[in-house]
Length: 414
Image (cartoon, rainbow, N blue to C red; front, top):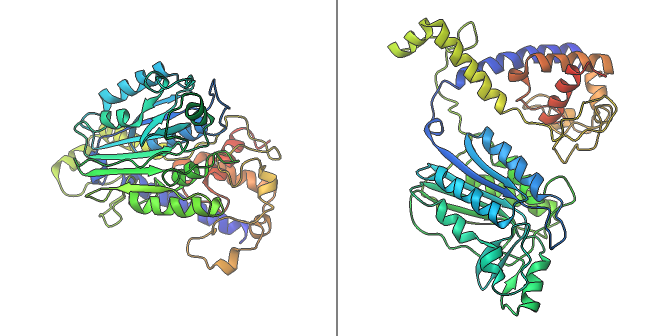
């Protein structure tokens, strides 16, 4: 494909973006839902070796959930007291929520079938330590079960935990293990999903990349358009199983009585787009009155744009972007590579939806697009100028590559 085709595709993408703005005005069930999440991640343990990924995992999950409409209460590298304070804040906010979600990354253990999360100041020197230093998972689940309809729990807390061995040997506590135990699900509301990074009583990998295998897969699938949470977990399981060479298999316990879709879009809804790229009047008098009021219409359009911008993925680092300097994208597939390096490699996704794999797989990006630094800068400037219509959409090298290009252009394509 030549550069002219890229320009034509960019115009098409802008048009698609305008349609996406209008689509926001079609209410779905998700728009009316109240969603509240608690996200915790602990890495810097004071009495055990630090873990590389949990805080990064939790921060990335918090951002992803905000983009899916959740009010997020979060905490990173918290002591026991700080953890209790954060859970108390969550308990106040979550009451009556349509969807209550809990994500934890860090050390956890089970003792005689009960699961505990470990704050960073946990030492576990004797049997009483559990009561005063650890946080029972059941305690968190009770807080998110008050008058809530749907409960989603994700525990990336099965990493190898030396404190479990210390507790078992020094304190003589029977049944102290690193892996977590199966959690029984109580009836209530529309049900519960509990997802573990690995099977009960097994140990999960922290991972050598930017995120653990479980969190990487969860981030990739939890917000997929019109994909149910149960199907998303099937995809997560497949990804983790493959990434760990069949050594780690996530496990879920599900009692949902309704389909849960966190990113729901009604593709069959009628859509009328006005000249400004927002819906024109269609049908009821309230809509016509809102359109007749320029101030109201402008506010609605700006709100729609802001919502769309929240769906644009963020880079893992705020550092300036340079053409030939490695970039921390926040995508393990391309992290640590520069723009110059990536455009000489192979595409990860089809450059045009539906294009036969034989046309693009095995090709090199710079040859296909006739990319050089100058032409790529022109394309990057288009991304920066049309962020809403372009940056949310897939790119042959991934969406975050496109976000990096826009940032590179904003810095003068240096």
